[in-house]
Length: 341
Ligand SMILES: [Zn+2]
Ligand SMILES: [Zn+2]
Image (tube, rainbow, N blue to C red; front, side, top):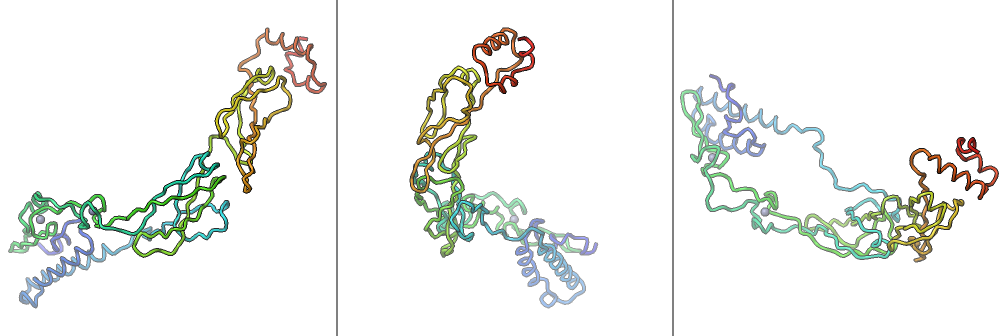
């Protein structure tokens, strides 16, 4: 058997998932024991030392290879500044979603920002959870060392998993992921101005840092206004669409329209007319001067489903004689109706 048949990790007494630091420290430890200057310059000792060195060089090369896409990513959220007021792009970006009323009438919201770091209270900054009774090390079964068959000799190598203690490692603290530090959170109140629009970016006068020194960069809060489906803010007006059945449009009647201040009952005058919009005064958005706009409702007139029954056609023809159209509109009646007359 040659040393090259042995896996480089086991030469260094390491597990397969050992990182570069563990490889380096195992190498340093083994060199102190197995360097020919220390243990004698026999051929066996020189071969063993060279195997340790080769294993180290190989693993070091393997573990320092950088994979593409390993670059650190700067945590800046890309946002659309079209609604902002010439804000510079440098800083911390936060994001919040608010309701339509909060945006229209203004409100204040509490947001949490990072404010330095503090020791993790769960593990008292250790990064590990202390336990009185740890199970035996799974790697060495509690012995604290591993035996490696090395030529004619058996080598005892300190177990790297437990550093020779024979007990399993302390579990990593889940709160701080073993760092011992957690980001301190600070609650701040942000005033949402009246008439805030979707995509508005507010600058917050707070210094934010994930470490103890403040970054000096600004902090921005992007606001998304949660709009009901199909609503558009145009200038200071709100535009929405409401479905109306053709009989209500024709014969008149009440329809219910959702506005920012609740449901409104609106009476539609009888007649098809050309009114495709109704205007509800002072139920719109507000402009810079605090002037309230209107709510414009687009009427989406629904036609009856399926083919027209014969009786209905007869009534329509009767209606046609009672209520004649402008000359050019009669052409719009279905061909079958004209044939029956
Ligand atoms: Zn912790
Ligand atoms: Zn062990």
